[in-house]
Length: 335
Image (cartoon, rainbow, N blue to C red):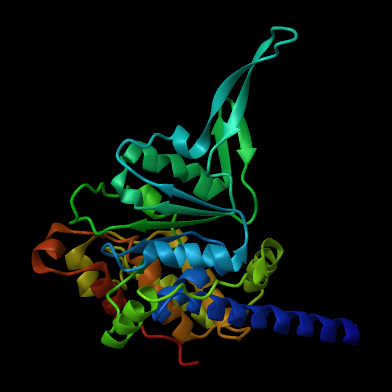
């Protein structure tokens, strides 16, 4: 039993070490954006999907493509446009004829969603009908077509990008689809030093190739390991309080919730916050989540799950402001 325990500990250390290799592989193509990269990897480890939001030209697509190159996984990219149809994502039935017998039959031609890593580029540039085509795939990891259900390969990870809604030609994602994303990751402008490095790197000779450091089996093993990370009862109680306090009418809701929130976060937000806190701990080489892990992920987990009121829009209040109020109002456990 002792030898088995030592063997397991060594295996865990090797798994964690691979995460460091993955960070370095991404850094060969991506300058800065440390928080964005961390949240993207947390989504991968937690087994959820990520929505990256930012104005055009900030490297969202490059970041996702780089992750695909660093992982030995099947990778597909779909450019979402106003004329994209659900069948362009899920697949369609083709009528085939056997020239020997003349017998005709339908065969399902799988679409690009049948992959390990799907980049849904500019997701909010396509109408809601096509956006909704991803719902079953993201939640159930299956595709239903023509009375048949087809399983998607494992692991399956959707990384979607969207432009802010004030950009022309965009369609707001429905709340049901937003809730399927584990994290909403905000991509901001780089610092002056980072922007200089970006200009130097992208206007010179060809850059370094992104090394492949992980396989699908590695990803699945790490996702299983995340669920073994320890999270104390006190932290679980705090997460429950934070999520419930985001709902107007809850006895523990701060004033900001009552003033600016129409609908608060549901239980899925609590599940996401637990898994993301565990994933962040593992990403930083720890096997126990801390209150810092929870606080760091509260905004990316909850910002897209709060339906803000007209008063919030009028006063310039955002979901991140409400999350900050929640963290200040609901005290974290002392240890």
